[in-house]
Length: 63
Image (cartoon, rainbow, N blue to C red; front, top):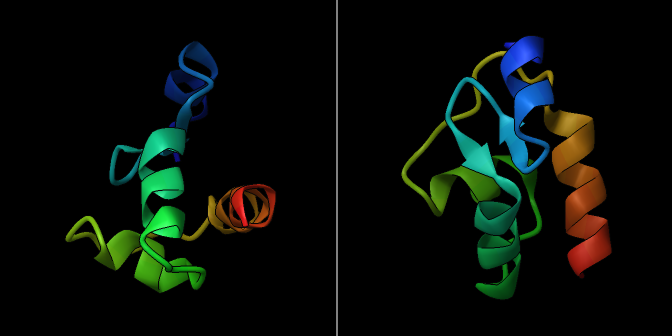
């Protein structure tokens, strides 16, 4: 994860895949709640998984 890049843009959740808060909200609205499925909705796959806790927190917030 690129912590410096993430600090520059708080809406950036996953620096490996350029996954943003709005992307996660869209996937949750589509009905996805699982970590890997959130990425799959956007044609992506998790890499380092350092964003997992952040993604899961956002899923809980949006659900």
